Length: 237
Ligand code: ATP
Image 1 (cartoon, helix red, strand yellow):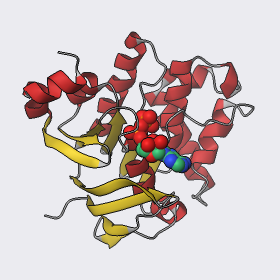
Image 2: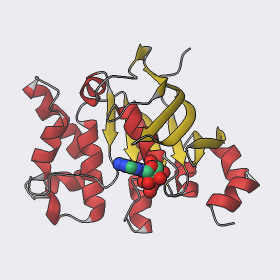
Image 3: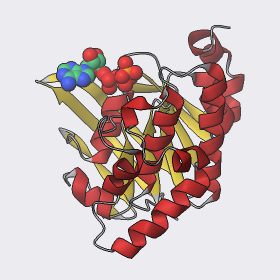
Image 4: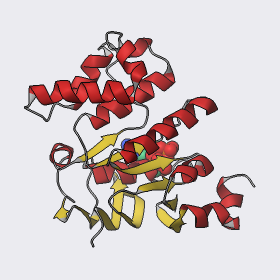
C-alpha cells in the first residue's frame, strides 16, 4: 500500500540559496515519524514545504495519493493535512476558545465545531478551565497544548508538529510527548520535527536525521537510538 505522505527528492531554496537538497521521506497511516537534526539542518523548511507554505523547486509531495506539491496550505488543510508551526503562533489577545475555533475555520459546519471543541477539552482538560483566558496569559506548556489542539480542530488525518519541546522545561516536554501518543491513539498520523533527538525517538516509530538539507540517517526509532553515530552526533554520548 502506498504511504499516506510521500515526499520525493525535494529541493528548496530561500532567495536561490539551496537549503533542502534532495529530501525523500514517507509517512504511513498510523505512524509517528520524526524528522531530527541540529539547528539549521532544514527541518522546519521541510515541514513548511509539505504544509504548502512554500513550494519546492523540484521534487514531489503526495498526500493520500494526490499530488499536493504546488497546492497552497489552505487546500492541504481541507484534505486533512494540518501543521502546528514552531513557536506556537497563537493569537495572543484572543482567548483559548477563540484560538481553537480559528483552527476549524475551513469548516462550514458550526455544530461540528462545538463538538470538536468538546473533544479538545476532553483531550486537554487544562484548556477547558482556561477557555476564556487570553492565550498570552498562559504558561509555555499550556500554550503548546493550545497550539496542538488548534491544529487538531480541522480534524486532520495527519498532523505535523514542529519543535513541540521548544522552550519547555523537561517535565512538560514529557507531558507534551505523552499527548502526541494519545493523539495517535485517536487515529491521527503524526510527523514531528525535533531537536530533542532521544526524547522524540522514544515516542516515534521511525525517524529521519537531516544534516545541511540532506538525510544522513534513517531507520526505525530503535535502530536510530542504537546507532553509535547518531548517539554521538545528536545525543551527546
Ligand atoms: P531550527 O530548528 O533552527 O528551525 P531547522 O532544522 O528547522 O532549524 P530551517 O529553519 O529549516 O532549519 O533552516 C534551514 C536553513 O535555511 C538555515 O540555514 C536557515 O538559516 C535558512 N532559512 C530558514 N528560513 C529562512 C528564510 N525565511 N529566509 C532565508 N533563509 C532561511
